[in-house]
Amino acid sequence: MNGFKTAALMTLMMILFLFVGNLLGGETGLMIAFVFSIILNFGSYWFSDKIVLTLYKAKEVSPKEAPELHRMVEDLSQRAMIPKPRVYVMPSDTPNAFATGRNPENGVVAVTTGIIKILNREELEGVIAHELAHIKNRDILVSTIAATLVGTITMIARLAGWTTILGGGRDRDGGGLSDLLLMILAPIVAILIQLAISRSREYMADETGAEITGKPMGLASALNKLEQAGKAIPMRNAETSSAHMFIVNPLSGKSLMKMFSTHPPIEQRVNRLREIANGRR
Image 1 (cartoon, rainbow, N blue to C red):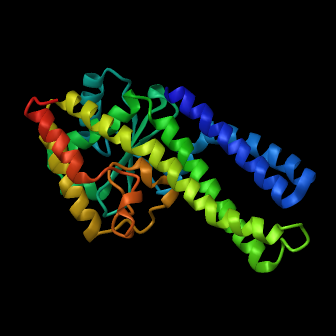
Image 2 (cartoon, rainbow, N blue to C red):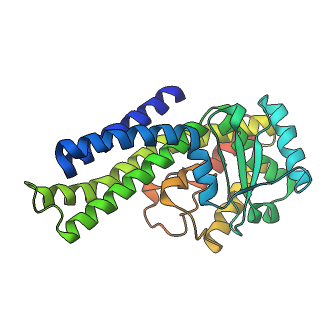
Image 3 (tube, rainbow, N blue to C red):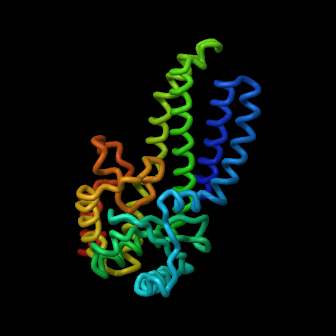
């Protein structure tokens, strides 16, 4: 299923580029857009994880630099029956984490310095297990490519906005109207893509993570702490395009549109974990 989603996202990226290329430049624009879509699809498959890690200034840490974190990741990876992923740390006081990579053999778990400080061992195990669940369930490539696609859509919307402001669409029939529609609709499409990718997979990763640790309430406690800390210490370098990759929404402190959040409400996630702990799931 995730293989189909990956192919669908890459196809959508190509269609989007071709549509915009034709809209802005006719046949010439169409050809240029075709070349760019091929390059972007290739790059998003092979390098999107590196792009996201660079975006958040994440650095790989060795077992010598973070021995306890590595031991925890190794132990939980064995329980999850997947290869041990590489471990990265992001320099941010906001407690959060995400997983990325093309497949379980190339998986990465990235955590912020803030999450290591604020969570106890059982809670941090719950978070790491949640991220390993994304790797085990093969969510990571889909979500990383989705981040690239959403970033591309955002860039296109801004390009359309500047084209309208500078009058670049006046020489084309209906050019100004087309640019305006593109500027309005592109962010909506980006939100819908993130919603389609994120919410259900977060529930599944919570459940799989709880199975890995055998302690659902450890993750539940961590989610409550992360939500409160995220409001108190918002992640200043968080990007809308990659917000869906984190265990809790790094933009939650900034957004008033909770119904369009890329993550399910923390309360619902905690209630589901409580049901698992009580044997009702």
